[in-house]
Length: 448
Image (cartoon, rainbow, N blue to C red):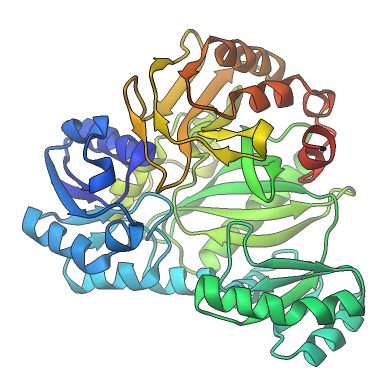
């Protein structure tokens, strides 16, 4: 096990990592930008190093500065959290070249799974169900049109280096495909510095199901069951839960086993998530792999009792998984609400600034993961996540009731947040019944 780790992130995930390290007896070094100089969690770290001004390109995305901080602080490993450099294979390679362990998967696995075309190739080898696709890149609009004629409209045009719902265009006919191809290519080049595109059949009105997995460096891989992530706005998740409501037990078994097969095919270790589309006929199709800890990892922790951050640390230190698949038995139901500093009533306009009044919820079954506090100044520079409300109860109905009660207890002023929207979602008939897909929030709750 490591004795000293640098946390290459900020906000709630930095605090989450610091806490896990502290419980394992590991010293932590927190890096921060000028915008985060007064972040409350910094005093919990054993050391703190400012690495630059507010823009992330000059701080949290600046690899030379992070490596310099790690060398000055004499750490053995770097935990990247999520976002920023967490899925950057080059950063992982630089860390290991500098004899600093990167707390995440192997470099080749990151490169393979980070390239959506290569990831789909590996998924095929692992016999993971796939939507009909172009079976490789489409480099010209004529290639795209030909591929679409074989796949059948509607189709989704996607960036090979994309992820997180970005770099996607939909086409229901040839005219739309031709008009959007060059734009998609240009956007991919600007966003990911990689203009390659591929195409797959557009699975409409699907549910978004993801499987949490853990692998060690000794070839052992287990899954920790699934999460339901269908409550989204513009392909960005708002509420997640585990287990997925009403999921057929056979589908659950098959989808979880498919994730494990893929992980073993690429020799994956650390925590990772395999994401799937589930259509209205209970057919599931591979979507992508996230080679990092997820924002929504707490719902899995609550239902399985396993600390995923601690497991990342142990696995990076060379330890074997101590649990077998049969020993992982989920209990109860967990729901996570993302609380962002945005105004849903004003088209989700960001709401940075000082929090003058702050009262977090509590009580039985409530967990609040956040770096915010009364007097905290939410910077306009970064992601708007203030924190995550997680509840865990014996069943889904009770979990929904607890989440509603906890949201009612929240006080965050004058900041505008997604708390009112979360309340509306948790009271909506479609959410309560589980009769939903990834588009229902925008269709039914956010109509203007």
